[in-house]
Amino acid sequence: MIESAAVQVGTPEDIDQLMALSAEACDENGFVAPKPEMILEQIWSALNQDAGLVGKITASDGTIEGAILLRITKLFYSDQPVLEEKGLFVHPDYRSGKLGRARMLIEFAKSSAKSLDLPLLIGVLSNTRTEAKIRLYERQFGGPAGVFFLYNAKTGVSGSTLATE
Image 1 (cartoon, helix red, strand yellow):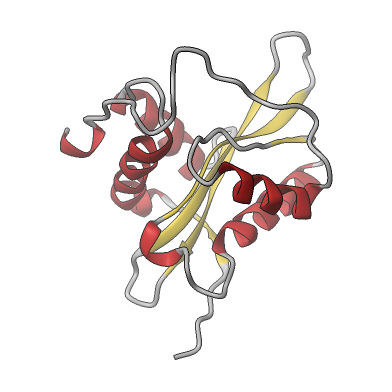
Image 2 (cartoon, rainbow, N blue to C red; image 1 turned 120 degrees about the vertical axis):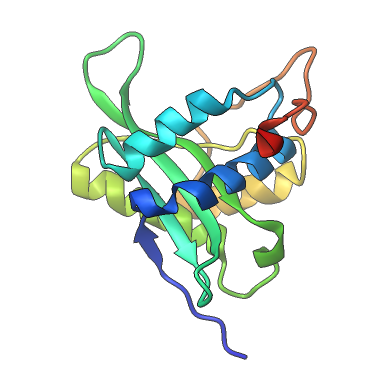
């Protein structure tokens, strides 16, 4: 079977699947306990294109395979808006395909930043397969502009209860 997919802009009808995907992302990458109401607020606003957007890859059966949450924000020291990636996640069932879904979502973010004429803030915060993820981002962006460190914490141990609420 030949795989094919494209990134589409998410709509409010995607909220339930995106919340479920977010729960898996929190379980894998979170390092503090997630608050479902806060995640819902960010995703819902972006799905309604209120200072953000969601890019999604959908399987032929309607299942969302992966998504990226982008929000227009301002850094604490500037009035200039930036497009900030709040989360990029591909469901584990769809990571081994030849499509390169994470790369497609990154390309969507780059295209969105260019069309909005905003700088894009995006990165990797993970203790799982970190080097491979960094190589993917370096292929897309070049060298990093910095690095994150966690002290007294590790990703994937957030104690998420998001999926059960």
